[in-house]
Length: 451
Image (cartoon, rainbow, N blue to C red; front, top):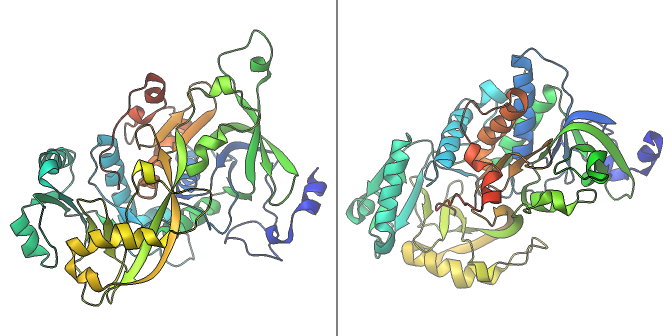
């Protein structure tokens, strides 16, 4: 089988004939077996792999074989690198605030965590400009209550009246703004690719193997397949299909981590997983989001925050010299087709630009420079991540569904899942409420700060 798979690999999958990410073995086929298979090589998946090896070393138990399977080696459709790169403390759910605070501390000391000997220091190009949420009179009381909650959790957030807002940011039109909240520390934006690559390089240096392919099928324990059927089962093998090939490699495994992002729900519909074991279905699906870039020489300067308008439109500075990027999530009825990453340019002209120009009059003369689309791994149940063990697949763990804030929560989420696998419990942060039980019980943990 090994020789057959090698022969079937296309040229683009072989190091000497095509591009592969740094650190990938020239023949990145999966091994025959692994202790942990992480499905999804985005920032969350690589964070899980990194923390597993770190904690293994702390417990002086070396030799855990961890592989990360990624189907898109150039990350051309990856949510991580197509995001706006923000981090904020301003959430309405305790767990999200705590994860943001952990991640901010992690990023501050990133070279202590992810630095690799004999490689240049990591510079994620963090811009500490803060998030600025604007609230209309109808939403003012809710924002004020949320800010008090955030403060109680240790976040440094200021409330600004319209007069104070205008004094600090003279370029804002404060009409219809009753109050604003402004993050004073540990908020801003950074380069997503740098963080992803840093996690990846460090994990590989610790012994994690990067594999190119797609998990499309599973083999589960026989006790579920023979009567009387059990109410649970274990995954024995994952089938990793080679790029552009019908050949696959079965990988025997002890643990599977579903970090497949926007396709995490689809993964649990794969061949070999009985529907009866996957109920309720994992409510995570891809939602396409547009990001537009523009130039406006008279726009906000270096103090420009990551602004969230009352209308839902957002923007931030993109480098210097009058460059910006932004977008807006559509209503449920206007969700675009997620089958590809094409951009609807009329959406900017008709929906986003009028809102931006109303809030920042200088943007009336902006000039669009570019655009792209990416995916939210959108949890339709409550827009929060799903972390922890599956209720019926005993060796399957989830780390997906962050609905747009996976990048900023990846350091914390990866550590949390690794703690469950290595230590059997959460230690750094108590994230039990983000587990599968809320889906089974039909009790959402609503996050009101989804952008």
